[in-house]
Image 1 (cartoon, helix red, strand yellow):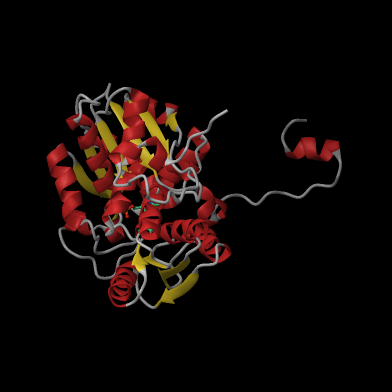
Image 2 (cartoon, rainbow, N blue to C red):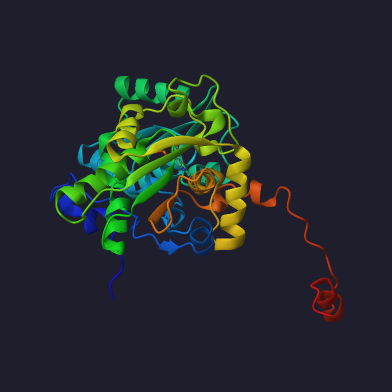
Length: 351
Ligand code: F0G
């Protein structure tokens, strides 16, 4: 019997590792590419969801983290640090445990989802809530890694991007070629950078006949790449992408321009509509930030930007269980019944 071995073993020849690199893995990657029936009908296209919430800690960050922690271990680091809106910290904390390292995480005070905080806590991370936003946390983390014995595992660490590019490989391996369009949410802009690198690498090596157009979507209150300027006080209910000054800014613009794509924004209302559609019609429960890709695809379709017949992949980046508040809010409260079949049947509308 064999199982998926994790992205380093599956794509070893395309990653910066050697025979002596200690592989720290939770068997991340190999995530489902799920045909999206309702989205396909709505757009007249063949839409697939790359369900990254199926990774070991529930987000795409694990792809980058297996690389970052393995390399940090190879270099003899005993402690790692990151700034995070929640998912990076959850992933760093888990992989640090596997590596026998200490993890420190800096998160914006009051602005990370409870599930993510719970992950960092249960994995034993040292957590500091910073009186500031994600951008402030990243500035602080960079400063600490420069002046103290602790390795930075944010996506400004280039091996993170290397790990994350494997998602593009998996998609091409599965579909037999690159899609026409790839859609994803954009926050710190590491992931759009990584996918673009992965697609270009496969095309350059003849493993894909083309590269897709990259479509990125930011939340309206946190859309510096759309505005063309830093957003000082970013806001959105999608806390994972509440970022005003993306570290991979230039790479994201390059991915957009080289691929012939675009980066646009979606409102919180559009994000929540897509979030509910994914759960109630596709059976895929994602966190709000993840729904920004689907919200963006639907917005583009309404604007007539989506020619029918194309093959489209939307990355949904994180698991819905991380941030269930939005699933519960606004939903009807379950009713309580006695242990009585007739009463239960009546309540269920069966009688
Ligand atoms: N979706 C989710 C669920 C995320 O957690 C993030 C980023 C993104 C999308 C955006 O990806 O930053 O590569 O453009 N989360 C980071 C974190 C910032 O700290 O967990 P990006």
